[in-house]
Length: 256
Image (cartoon, rainbow, N blue to C red; front, side):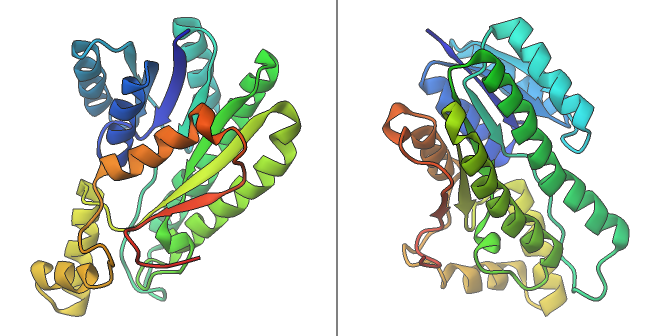
C-alpha cells in the first residue's frame, strides 16, 4: 500500500530533498510550498521519475490553509501516513536592530506553522486510527543559539519543545513526533544567510564560509540528501520506537 506524505516547504532546498527521498520509499508526495511554481516543478519531476505527486500552494502561517491542505490531500491520495513540517524562513540581523515585521513573520511561519501542521496531521491520524509520523524541522540553532539569528534560534528551540510535548500527548494514538536539527546545509536559504552574515562581519562570503567550515568535524557542509536520509529513517518502520527526539544532522558541530 502506498503511503502518503505531506512535505511543507518542499519547493526547494531541504524540503525538495526530502520529497525525492520519500518518493524512493514509494510514498505518494504532496509537495506543498508558498511558491506554487517551485512546488509544481518538483511535483512534475517526481512524476517523471514514476512517483505519485501533486503540488499544493500553502502558507503554513495560515492555520485554515494547513487544515484545508490535509483535506485536499486525503481526497487525492487517501489516508495520510507522514507529515513533514519543513517550511521555514530565516533572517540575519543583530538582536537590537531586528525589524518587528521580520520577527513576526518568522515566528508565524516557523513556530505557528509547525504548531498548525502538528495539529492538522494529528487530527487526521486520530480520525484514521492507525497512528502516523510527524517530523519537524528544528535546527542546530535550536540546540545552541546562533548570533545574528535571535528570532530564528528562538523558533527552533520552541519547535524542539513542541516536538516533545506533542510526542507525550500523541503516543497513546501511536503517533510519533520527532525533529531533525540540520547544521550547515547548502541551500538558497543558506546562501542568503552567508551573504548577510559576511556583510555584517565585514568579511567576504568565501571567508565567512571558510570560518563556518572549520567548525564541522567531518569537514564538509551537509547536502539536502544528508538531512533527507534522517527523515526517511524517522518515517520508516525502523524508527517505530523513537518519539520526542531531535536528531542533529550537522557533521559533528555540536554534541549532545
